[in-house]
Every structure is written in structure tokens, then in C-alpha cells.
Amino acid sequence: MLIDCHTHILAMGLNEEFAVKFNRQALLCVYRAQGLLPSHRLPTEEEWQKCNQSFQQADPNQLLKDYAEFDKVVILGFSPHWFEDLGLGGTTDSTGVTGVAGPPHPEKCNDYIAALVKQQPDKLIGFASVNPNYKGPKAAVKELERAICDLKLHGLKLYPTYQHWSPDDRDLAFPIFEKAQELGIPVTVHMAGSTVTSAPLKFSKPMLLDDVGNEFRSLRLIIAHMGLPWVDEAKYLLTKHANFYGDLSYFNGSIDRETLYRFLLSCKPYFVPLQKLFFGSDYPAYDHKALVKMLRTVNCEAERLGTARIPENEIEGILGDNFAKVMNLSE
Image (cartoon, rainbow, N blue to C red; front, top):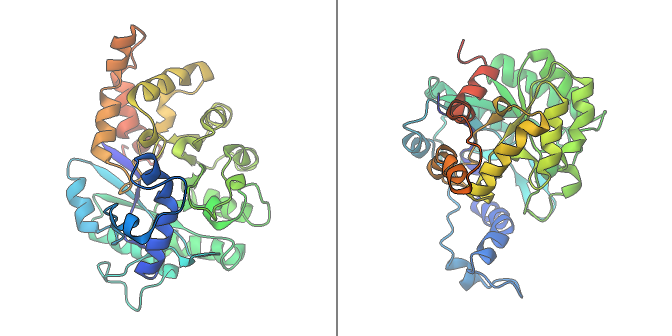
């Protein structure tokens, strides 16, 4: 199977003003690295306009066209959060494409994801999202139960870095992990740095999941973005915890093919089978087709370097079969 386990859809926030501010924070370093914006000062509005930014919501119909050759695509919700310098953000349907009634609002993020899955049940897999810092952990647990039991979503995405809470917080976070384990769903956790200024890096470190793995040993937990930049830390958590897995999104878009090859080659000496890795793209931020090609041609680096090849069946496993097995899609 060919599966992307990490994509985003719809809009991030109630209006274009939020989207512009959020994405400019996130993308400033990207455009600077590309030489499109100055690094010695903040850009002018005229300089920003030359970057050809688009802050329109990610269109579900375009996603379906872009993923025509994929068997499954996971679409992730982003639960509501008050960003201190930006305002209220979260997954929002600003064009009414989902058909969810009423004015758009991030509090409906799980309803939006569920509505899209209902439109394309054979293609899309929906992951809910909750934020214990929004209305408290009890409300988050209640919303998670609604999203899984009533809306029929199949997993959970958490954003501790963006939402200012720690995964090892026994009061805020553990009730959510406990409910997810009870419901038997997988949980993907954003465990990577963020270029959004207000997102504290201290909540990004993969080691914060160690107590979670010890406390909730039946919980299937996916470390998103392979913990970038703390990749070795994330890798060792996959070594230690039987039900921990790694999602390659963002990490694979930040490296070249040789670095990807060397990473894959390094996993088994860490006692991490490649069956624990899942392909993800962070669509629409990255070109998913280019990332698939990079993974499928990774053994060109083995030939160039005269080193061991990555077994082709293990590469295909990363591209979908591994995730399908963990999600019980192949049974």
C-alpha cells in the first residue's frame, strides 16, 4: 500500500490575517535560507509579496487529485488554541466545503475532519485533535471520546509545542493518553522544533514521551517528524518502547537523499526495525511525490558509496505497509 500518514487540510485560523501572520512566522527562515528575504533585518511588505505566498485553505478536492496514486491519506485536525501574538487558531473550514453547519470556528475541527472522511471513506483516514490547555483536560477527554465514538475518527493528533503543554504532564496530558489507550486508537504527537516564534522548544523534545511509554504500555504512539532536530533521541525511544513508531514527515523534507539513506542504515544498530517507520509528507508544506521518489531511489546512495543496500521490501513497508499493519488496515 502507498499511504501518507501526515497531511494537513483546510485553513489554520478564522481569517486570512491570522493565516498571514502564522505562516510568515513559520516561513521566514525558509525564505531567508532560499535567499528570498534579508537576514540582517525583518522583511518589508514589498519583499514578502515577492515570495509568492499563498494562504488560502488547503482544498480537499485538490488533495484528492494530488494523491490519486495513493491508497490512503491521513488528514489531521489541529485543535483550537489561543496563540499569544496571533489570536485563535486551529483547523477551520473557511469556504464551507465540508458542509458542517454554522459559522466557521476551530472548535469544529473534528467535525470538519469527520465530514471530509465521510465524503471519501475509502481514501481518507481522519485523526482528531484536542488541546488540554484550551478548556482543560476534562473537556479535552470528552471531546476525544466524541470524536472517536460519535464522529468515527480513527486516531488522535496532539500539538504540545504549539499549545504550551508538556507530554509528561500528569495532570494535563496523561488523562488524554489514558483515554486514547482505553479507546484503542493510535496517537501522533508533534515532537519536533517549530519555526513559529511562540512555540516553546522545551515541549518539543522526544524524551518527554518516555514517561508516557512507561505509563501507557498498550498505547500506539507515533513520534511525528522523527523528533527533528533530536532524531537520535526519538530513535532511541523507538528502541525502548514496544509500541512507539516514527513518522518521517518534515524530517524527510529537511534532508537530502544521502542523509535519508544514512539514517535508515543507522536504525538497525539502534535496534530499530524499519517496520517502525512511516512515510509522511506534511502536505501541503512539502512535495509528497518528490519525497516518495527520494525514498524509492535511496539505494542509489548505497551504490554510489559502495555500502549496504536497504531491502526493497522494507522501503515499500515504510511507504505504507507498516502504517497499514499498525492501523489494522491490511487484515
